[in-house]
Image 1 (cartoon, rainbow, N blue to C red):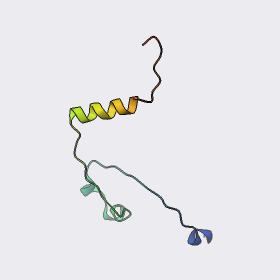
Image 2: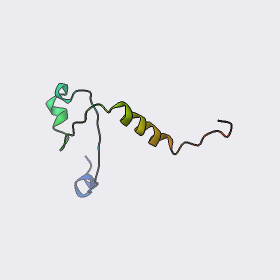
Image 3: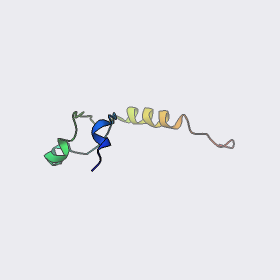
Image 4: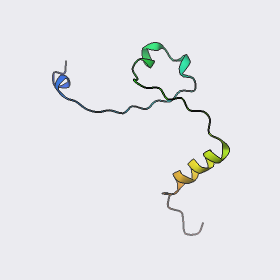
Length: 63
């Protein structure tokens, strides 16, 4: 019993990923207000994502 939970309003963003959402039970899918379907990225898109992820990584001076 958490009475303050009824009066508190927190905005929460929950992101989940699944290989196939069709296989998920409806009880889980109903927890989400939106579903976004994304295809598999191409090789060039994967390269771009990797390079963007590595931009903030500090490299050793000898490399």
